[in-house]
Image (cartoon, rainbow, N blue to C red; front, side):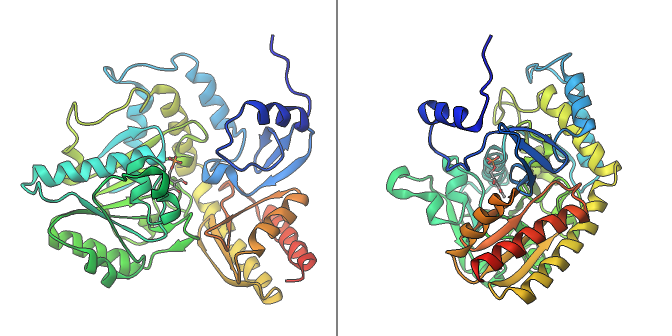
Length: 406
Ligand SMILES: Cc1ncc(COP(=O)(O)O)c(C=O)c1O
Protein backbone atom coordinates (compact mmCIF):
# COMPACT_ATOMS: atom_id res chain seq x y z
CA UNK A 1 0.00 0.00 0.00
CA UNK A 2 1.46 3.40 -1.00
CA UNK A 3 1.51 5.86 1.88
CA UNK A 4 -0.01 9.28 1.10
CA UNK A 5 2.12 12.39 1.54
CA UNK A 6 1.10 14.21 4.68
CA UNK A 7 2.11 17.77 3.83
CA UNK A 8 2.90 20.14 0.96
CA UNK A 9 6.56 20.15 1.99
CA UNK A 10 6.88 16.36 1.96
CA UNK A 11 5.25 15.98 -1.46
CA UNK A 12 7.19 18.88 -2.99
CA UNK A 13 10.52 17.52 -1.74
CA UNK A 14 9.75 14.24 -3.51
CA UNK A 15 8.51 16.09 -6.60
CA UNK A 16 11.76 18.04 -6.73
CA UNK A 17 13.53 14.71 -6.90
CA UNK A 18 11.36 12.95 -9.48
CA UNK A 19 8.95 15.27 -11.29
CA UNK A 20 10.24 16.75 -14.54
CA UNK A 21 10.76 20.46 -14.14
CA UNK A 22 9.13 21.73 -17.34
CA UNK A 23 6.55 23.78 -15.41
CA UNK A 24 7.14 26.57 -12.87
CA UNK A 25 4.77 25.64 -10.07
CA UNK A 26 3.36 27.47 -7.04
CA UNK A 27 4.51 25.75 -3.79
CA UNK A 28 1.27 23.97 -2.92
CA UNK A 29 -0.02 20.46 -3.57
CA UNK A 30 -3.64 20.42 -4.66
CA UNK A 31 -5.59 17.83 -2.75
CA UNK A 32 -9.33 18.31 -3.24
CA UNK A 33 -11.91 20.80 -4.44
CA UNK A 34 -15.55 21.79 -4.09
CA UNK A 35 -17.17 24.29 -6.44
CA UNK A 36 -14.75 27.24 -6.85
CA UNK A 37 -12.70 26.28 -3.80
CA UNK A 38 -9.65 24.01 -3.44
CA UNK A 39 -7.64 22.68 -0.51
CA UNK A 40 -3.96 21.81 -0.40
CA UNK A 41 -2.27 19.00 1.54
CA UNK A 42 -1.78 21.33 4.53
CA UNK A 43 -5.55 21.92 4.48
CA UNK A 44 -5.23 25.55 3.34
CA UNK A 45 -8.32 26.69 1.44
CA UNK A 46 -8.04 28.79 -1.74
CA UNK A 47 -10.53 30.44 -4.06
CA UNK A 48 -9.67 29.05 -7.49
CA UNK A 49 -10.01 31.63 -10.28
CA UNK A 50 -7.53 29.80 -12.49
CA UNK A 51 -9.88 26.83 -12.76
CA UNK A 52 -7.29 24.49 -14.27
CA UNK A 53 -6.75 27.19 -16.95
CA UNK A 54 -10.37 27.17 -18.07
CA UNK A 55 -10.83 23.42 -17.62
CA UNK A 56 -12.94 23.32 -14.45
CA UNK A 57 -15.92 24.98 -16.11
CA UNK A 58 -18.31 23.29 -13.72
CA UNK A 59 -15.97 23.79 -10.79
CA UNK A 60 -14.62 20.99 -8.66
CA UNK A 61 -16.50 17.87 -7.60
CA UNK A 62 -19.68 18.79 -9.49
CA UNK A 63 -22.40 16.19 -8.74
CA UNK A 64 -23.17 15.62 -12.45
CA UNK A 65 -19.49 14.86 -13.10
CA UNK A 66 -19.15 12.62 -10.06
CA UNK A 67 -22.19 10.66 -11.25
CA UNK A 68 -20.80 10.39 -14.80
CA UNK A 69 -17.50 9.13 -13.40
CA UNK A 70 -19.34 6.44 -11.50
CA UNK A 71 -21.21 5.35 -14.64
CA UNK A 72 -17.94 5.26 -16.61
CA UNK A 73 -16.73 2.35 -14.47
CA UNK A 74 -18.76 0.04 -16.73
CA UNK A 75 -16.44 0.73 -19.63
CA UNK A 76 -13.31 2.86 -19.53
CA UNK A 77 -12.10 2.29 -23.05
CA UNK A 78 -12.97 0.66 -26.32
CA UNK A 79 -11.29 0.96 -29.68
CA UNK A 80 -12.43 3.29 -32.43
CA UNK A 81 -13.09 0.08 -34.41
CA UNK A 82 -16.44 0.32 -32.60
CA UNK A 83 -18.99 2.98 -31.65
CA UNK A 84 -19.60 3.93 -28.04
CA UNK A 85 -22.77 5.50 -26.72
CA UNK A 86 -21.38 8.57 -24.86
CA UNK A 87 -19.36 9.62 -27.93
CA UNK A 88 -22.48 9.59 -30.08
CA UNK A 89 -24.37 11.60 -27.44
CA UNK A 90 -21.61 14.24 -27.33
CA UNK A 91 -21.60 14.66 -31.13
CA UNK A 92 -25.40 14.98 -31.08
CA UNK A 93 -25.34 17.57 -28.28
CA UNK A 94 -22.69 19.66 -30.04
CA UNK A 95 -24.27 19.53 -33.49
CA UNK A 96 -27.81 20.16 -32.25
CA UNK A 97 -26.59 23.28 -30.45
CA UNK A 98 -24.36 24.76 -33.15
CA UNK A 99 -23.86 25.17 -36.91
CA UNK A 100 -21.77 22.00 -37.09
CA UNK A 101 -22.67 18.71 -38.74
CA UNK A 102 -19.87 16.40 -37.60
CA UNK A 103 -17.51 16.04 -34.64
CA UNK A 104 -14.07 14.39 -34.69
CA UNK A 105 -12.47 13.61 -31.35
CA UNK A 106 -8.97 14.31 -30.04
CA UNK A 107 -7.28 14.22 -26.63
CA UNK A 108 -6.20 17.82 -26.10
CA UNK A 109 -6.41 21.31 -27.50
CA UNK A 110 -3.18 20.99 -29.43
CA UNK A 111 -4.28 17.71 -30.93
CA UNK A 112 -7.64 19.17 -31.98
CA UNK A 113 -5.85 22.07 -33.68
CA UNK A 114 -3.40 19.67 -35.32
CA UNK A 115 -6.51 17.93 -36.69
CA UNK A 116 -7.85 21.22 -38.04
CA UNK A 117 -4.54 21.93 -39.80
CA UNK A 118 -4.44 18.46 -41.41
CA UNK A 119 -8.08 18.82 -42.37
CA UNK A 120 -7.42 22.18 -44.10
CA UNK A 121 -4.51 20.79 -46.11
CA UNK A 122 -6.45 17.75 -47.29
CA UNK A 123 -9.50 19.89 -48.05
CA UNK A 124 -7.36 22.02 -50.39
CA UNK A 125 -5.98 18.95 -52.19
CA UNK A 126 -9.43 17.36 -52.46
CA UNK A 127 -10.73 20.59 -54.02
CA UNK A 128 -8.02 20.62 -56.70
CA UNK A 129 -5.52 22.90 -54.96
CA UNK A 130 -2.45 20.90 -53.88
CA UNK A 131 -0.47 24.17 -53.95
CA UNK A 132 -2.45 25.44 -50.95
CA UNK A 133 -0.92 24.42 -47.64
CA UNK A 134 -0.28 27.62 -45.67
CA UNK A 135 -2.36 28.47 -42.61
CA UNK A 136 -2.55 32.15 -41.68
CA UNK A 137 -2.84 32.53 -37.92
CA UNK A 138 -2.73 35.59 -35.70
CA UNK A 139 0.05 37.25 -33.77
CA UNK A 140 -0.34 36.76 -29.99
CA UNK A 141 -2.41 33.64 -30.63
CA UNK A 142 -1.93 30.34 -28.83
CA UNK A 143 -2.74 27.02 -30.49
CA UNK A 144 -0.69 24.42 -28.61
CA UNK A 145 2.77 22.99 -28.10
CA UNK A 146 3.12 20.22 -30.65
CA UNK A 147 5.50 21.21 -33.44
CA UNK A 148 2.73 22.19 -35.86
CA UNK A 149 0.51 23.96 -33.34
CA UNK A 150 3.45 25.71 -31.68
CA UNK A 151 4.40 26.98 -35.13
CA UNK A 152 0.80 28.02 -35.80
CA UNK A 153 1.00 30.00 -32.56
CA UNK A 154 1.87 33.60 -33.38
CA UNK A 155 4.47 34.01 -30.64
CA UNK A 156 8.23 33.68 -31.09
CA UNK A 157 8.58 32.61 -27.46
CA UNK A 158 6.52 29.49 -28.18
CA UNK A 159 8.38 28.68 -31.43
CA UNK A 160 11.76 28.76 -29.67
CA UNK A 161 13.58 28.09 -33.00
CA UNK A 162 16.90 28.00 -31.16
CA UNK A 163 15.96 24.60 -29.76
CA UNK A 164 13.17 23.22 -31.91
CA UNK A 165 14.18 23.94 -35.49
CA UNK A 166 13.42 22.95 -38.13
CA UNK A 167 9.84 24.06 -37.50
CA UNK A 168 7.16 22.77 -39.87
CA UNK A 169 6.57 24.81 -43.00
CA UNK A 170 3.32 26.42 -43.94
CA UNK A 171 2.49 29.10 -41.39
CA UNK A 172 2.27 32.87 -41.72
CA UNK A 173 1.05 35.42 -39.22
CA UNK A 174 -1.19 38.45 -39.32
CA UNK A 175 -2.28 41.00 -36.77
CA UNK A 176 -5.34 40.06 -34.76
CA UNK A 177 -8.33 42.35 -35.38
CA UNK A 178 -6.64 43.77 -38.50
CA UNK A 179 -8.22 42.52 -41.72
CA UNK A 180 -5.75 44.41 -43.92
CA UNK A 181 -2.88 42.59 -42.22
CA UNK A 182 -4.56 39.23 -43.01
CA UNK A 183 -5.03 40.28 -46.64
CA UNK A 184 -1.32 41.15 -46.85
CA UNK A 185 -0.48 37.55 -45.90
CA UNK A 186 -3.01 36.05 -48.32
CA UNK A 187 -1.66 34.23 -51.38
CA UNK A 188 -2.39 31.35 -53.75
CA UNK A 189 -0.67 29.02 -51.29
CA UNK A 190 -3.12 29.63 -48.41
CA UNK A 191 -5.52 26.82 -47.41
CA UNK A 192 -7.05 28.31 -44.24
CA UNK A 193 -7.22 31.12 -41.72
CA UNK A 194 -7.05 30.13 -38.07
CA UNK A 195 -8.00 32.38 -35.16
CA UNK A 196 -9.35 32.39 -31.63
CA UNK A 197 -12.56 34.49 -31.47
CA UNK A 198 -11.26 35.71 -28.11
CA UNK A 199 -7.49 35.43 -27.62
CA UNK A 200 -6.87 33.83 -24.23
CA UNK A 201 -3.12 33.41 -23.59
CA UNK A 202 -2.56 36.48 -25.76
CA UNK A 203 -4.19 38.67 -23.12
CA UNK A 204 -7.99 38.14 -23.13
CA UNK A 205 -8.62 40.01 -26.38
CA UNK A 206 -12.06 39.63 -27.96
CA UNK A 207 -12.14 39.86 -31.77
CA UNK A 208 -14.29 42.57 -33.29
CA UNK A 209 -17.40 41.46 -35.17
CA UNK A 210 -16.06 43.24 -38.29
CA UNK A 211 -12.82 41.26 -38.10
CA UNK A 212 -14.49 37.83 -37.86
CA UNK A 213 -17.05 38.72 -40.55
CA UNK A 214 -14.23 40.05 -42.74
CA UNK A 215 -12.36 36.74 -42.34
CA UNK A 216 -15.51 34.82 -43.23
CA UNK A 217 -16.00 36.88 -46.41
CA UNK A 218 -12.33 36.53 -47.35
CA UNK A 219 -12.40 32.73 -46.93
CA UNK A 220 -15.61 32.48 -48.97
CA UNK A 221 -14.09 34.61 -51.72
CA UNK A 222 -10.92 32.46 -51.86
CA UNK A 223 -12.62 29.08 -51.32
CA UNK A 224 -10.50 28.35 -48.23
CA UNK A 225 -11.43 27.31 -44.70
CA UNK A 226 -12.14 29.55 -41.75
CA UNK A 227 -11.03 27.69 -38.62
CA UNK A 228 -11.65 28.87 -35.09
CA UNK A 229 -9.73 27.73 -32.03
CA UNK A 230 -12.20 27.60 -29.15
CA UNK A 231 -10.10 25.38 -26.92
CA UNK A 232 -10.17 28.02 -24.18
CA UNK A 233 -13.30 30.06 -24.91
CA UNK A 234 -15.63 27.31 -26.15
CA UNK A 235 -17.65 24.92 -23.98
CA UNK A 236 -19.84 27.66 -22.51
CA UNK A 237 -17.19 30.05 -21.19
CA UNK A 238 -18.54 33.13 -22.99
CA UNK A 239 -22.15 32.31 -22.14
CA UNK A 240 -22.75 30.39 -25.38
CA UNK A 241 -21.59 26.89 -26.25
CA UNK A 242 -19.19 28.50 -28.76
CA UNK A 243 -17.77 32.02 -28.45
CA UNK A 244 -18.40 32.65 -32.16
CA UNK A 245 -22.14 32.31 -31.50
CA UNK A 246 -21.90 35.73 -29.79
CA UNK A 247 -20.80 37.16 -33.15
CA UNK A 248 -23.11 35.35 -35.57
CA UNK A 249 -20.09 34.35 -37.68
CA UNK A 250 -19.83 30.66 -38.51
CA UNK A 251 -16.46 29.00 -39.20
CA UNK A 252 -16.00 25.87 -41.30
CA UNK A 253 -14.27 24.10 -38.45
CA UNK A 254 -13.72 24.81 -34.78
CA UNK A 255 -11.66 23.14 -32.07
CA UNK A 256 -12.75 22.48 -28.50
CA UNK A 257 -10.97 20.96 -25.47
CA UNK A 258 -10.32 22.23 -21.92
CA UNK A 259 -13.73 22.47 -20.16
CA UNK A 260 -15.32 19.92 -22.50
CA UNK A 261 -14.35 16.98 -20.28
CA UNK A 262 -14.41 18.75 -16.89
CA UNK A 263 -10.84 17.60 -16.28
CA UNK A 264 -10.56 14.41 -18.26
CA UNK A 265 -8.49 14.98 -21.43
CA UNK A 266 -10.64 15.39 -24.51
CA UNK A 267 -10.54 17.55 -27.60
CA UNK A 268 -12.77 17.87 -30.62
CA UNK A 269 -12.86 19.29 -34.11
CA UNK A 270 -16.34 20.36 -35.15
CA UNK A 271 -16.96 20.75 -38.86
CA UNK A 272 -19.65 21.57 -41.40
CA UNK A 273 -20.13 21.45 -45.16
CA UNK A 274 -17.41 19.72 -47.17
CA UNK A 275 -15.04 20.17 -44.23
CA UNK A 276 -17.23 17.65 -42.39
CA UNK A 277 -16.41 14.99 -45.01
CA UNK A 278 -12.68 15.58 -45.52
CA UNK A 279 -10.96 13.29 -43.03
CA UNK A 280 -11.77 9.81 -44.30
CA UNK A 281 -10.64 6.49 -42.73
CA UNK A 282 -6.87 6.23 -42.58
CA UNK A 283 -6.21 10.00 -42.74
CA UNK A 284 -6.46 10.90 -39.07
CA UNK A 285 -7.27 9.36 -35.69
CA UNK A 286 -6.01 8.48 -32.25
CA UNK A 287 -6.26 5.48 -29.92
CA UNK A 288 -7.82 7.31 -26.99
CA UNK A 289 -9.82 9.97 -28.84
CA UNK A 290 -13.56 9.73 -28.30
CA UNK A 291 -13.33 6.97 -25.70
CA UNK A 292 -16.28 6.27 -23.39
CA UNK A 293 -14.69 7.66 -20.21
CA UNK A 294 -13.85 11.10 -21.62
CA UNK A 295 -17.04 11.25 -23.66
CA UNK A 296 -19.18 10.22 -20.68
CA UNK A 297 -17.78 13.21 -18.81
CA UNK A 298 -18.16 15.48 -21.84
CA UNK A 299 -21.79 14.37 -22.19
CA UNK A 300 -22.48 15.26 -18.54
CA UNK A 301 -20.56 18.53 -18.90
CA UNK A 302 -22.42 19.67 -22.00
CA UNK A 303 -25.79 18.57 -20.64
CA UNK A 304 -25.19 20.58 -17.44
CA UNK A 305 -23.83 23.58 -19.35
CA UNK A 306 -26.68 23.68 -21.84
CA UNK A 307 -29.61 22.58 -19.70
CA UNK A 308 -28.50 23.53 -16.19
CA UNK A 309 -28.40 27.34 -16.41
CA UNK A 310 -24.58 27.41 -16.22
CA UNK A 311 -24.02 29.53 -19.31
CA UNK A 312 -26.65 32.04 -18.15
CA UNK A 313 -24.73 32.33 -14.87
CA UNK A 314 -21.49 32.93 -16.81
CA UNK A 315 -23.10 35.90 -18.59
CA UNK A 316 -24.68 37.42 -15.46
CA UNK A 317 -21.78 36.95 -13.05
CA UNK A 318 -19.24 37.81 -15.77
CA UNK A 319 -20.92 41.18 -16.29
CA UNK A 320 -20.89 41.81 -12.56
CA UNK A 321 -17.20 40.89 -12.45
CA UNK A 322 -16.25 43.36 -15.22
CA UNK A 323 -18.25 46.11 -13.50
CA UNK A 324 -16.38 45.44 -10.24
CA UNK A 325 -13.02 45.36 -12.05
CA UNK A 326 -13.85 48.74 -13.63
CA UNK A 327 -14.54 50.17 -10.17
CA UNK A 328 -11.13 48.84 -9.14
CA UNK A 329 -9.61 50.52 -12.21
CA UNK A 330 -10.92 53.89 -10.97
CA UNK A 331 -9.06 53.34 -7.71
CA UNK A 332 -5.84 51.77 -9.03
CA UNK A 333 -4.24 53.51 -11.99
CA UNK A 334 -2.10 50.44 -12.68
CA UNK A 335 -5.15 48.88 -14.41
CA UNK A 336 -5.25 50.34 -17.91
CA UNK A 337 -8.10 48.29 -19.38
CA UNK A 338 -10.73 45.75 -18.35
CA UNK A 339 -12.06 43.43 -21.03
CA UNK A 340 -13.64 40.04 -21.49
CA UNK A 341 -16.75 38.09 -22.34
CA UNK A 342 -18.81 35.91 -20.03
CA UNK A 343 -16.42 34.18 -17.66
CA UNK A 344 -13.11 34.97 -19.37
CA UNK A 345 -12.00 38.37 -18.15
CA UNK A 346 -8.79 40.31 -18.02
CA UNK A 347 -7.34 43.41 -16.41
CA UNK A 348 -4.47 44.88 -18.39
CA UNK A 349 -1.72 46.45 -16.29
CA UNK A 350 0.55 49.37 -17.08
CA UNK A 351 3.73 47.29 -16.95
CA UNK A 352 5.09 43.73 -17.02
CA UNK A 353 6.73 43.75 -13.59
CA UNK A 354 3.65 44.21 -11.46
CA UNK A 355 1.49 41.31 -12.74
CA UNK A 356 3.45 38.48 -11.08
CA UNK A 357 3.67 40.52 -7.87
CA UNK A 358 -0.13 40.90 -7.76
CA UNK A 359 -0.54 37.18 -8.47
CA UNK A 360 1.81 36.36 -5.58
CA UNK A 361 0.08 38.77 -3.19
CA UNK A 362 -3.30 37.21 -4.06
CA UNK A 363 -1.77 33.77 -3.51
CA UNK A 364 -0.75 34.86 0.01
CA UNK A 365 -4.40 35.89 0.48
CA UNK A 366 -5.47 32.41 -0.67
CA UNK A 367 -6.88 33.57 -4.00
CA UNK A 368 -5.56 31.88 -7.14
CA UNK A 369 -5.32 34.03 -10.27
CA UNK A 370 -2.97 34.11 -13.21
CA UNK A 371 -1.08 36.65 -15.32
CA UNK A 372 -0.76 36.14 -19.08
CA UNK A 373 0.89 37.96 -21.97
CA UNK A 374 3.20 39.63 -19.45
CA UNK A 375 0.79 42.25 -18.18
CA UNK A 376 -2.77 40.92 -18.21
CA UNK A 377 -4.37 39.49 -15.08
CA UNK A 378 -6.56 36.73 -16.43
CA UNK A 379 -9.60 35.37 -14.63
CA UNK A 380 -11.00 32.07 -15.91
CA UNK A 381 -12.96 30.70 -12.94
CA UNK A 382 -15.59 27.99 -12.97
CA UNK A 383 -18.71 29.22 -14.79
CA UNK A 384 -20.70 28.52 -11.63
CA UNK A 385 -18.88 31.26 -9.66
CA UNK A 386 -21.18 33.51 -7.64
CA UNK A 387 -21.17 37.29 -7.15
CA UNK A 388 -20.06 36.68 -3.54
CA UNK A 389 -17.01 34.80 -4.84
CA UNK A 390 -16.26 37.65 -7.27
CA UNK A 391 -16.31 39.98 -4.24
CA UNK A 392 -13.65 37.84 -2.54
CA UNK A 393 -11.36 38.10 -5.59
CA UNK A 394 -11.91 41.83 -6.07
CA UNK A 395 -11.18 42.47 -2.36
CA UNK A 396 -7.93 40.46 -2.63
CA UNK A 397 -6.92 42.42 -5.75
CA UNK A 398 -7.75 45.72 -4.07
CA UNK A 399 -5.67 44.84 -1.00
CA UNK A 400 -2.80 43.48 -3.13
CA UNK A 401 -2.62 46.64 -5.24
CA UNK A 402 -2.88 48.88 -2.16
CA UNK A 403 -0.06 46.97 -0.43
CA UNK A 404 2.07 47.26 -3.58
CA UNK A 405 1.29 50.97 -3.77
CA UNK A 406 -0.13 50.84 -7.30
C1 LIG B 1 -6.70 28.73 -27.47
C2 LIG B 1 -5.89 27.52 -27.12
N1 LIG B 1 -5.63 26.61 -28.07
C3 LIG B 1 -4.93 25.50 -27.81
C4 LIG B 1 -4.43 25.26 -26.55
C5 LIG B 1 -3.65 24.01 -26.30
O1 LIG B 1 -4.43 23.13 -25.57
P1 LIG B 1 -3.75 21.86 -24.81
O2 LIG B 1 -2.90 22.43 -23.73
O3 LIG B 1 -4.92 21.07 -24.31
O4 LIG B 1 -2.96 21.14 -25.84
C6 LIG B 1 -4.67 26.17 -25.53
C7 LIG B 1 -4.12 25.94 -24.18
O5 LIG B 1 -3.98 26.83 -23.38
C8 LIG B 1 -5.43 27.33 -25.82
O6 LIG B 1 -5.68 28.24 -24.88
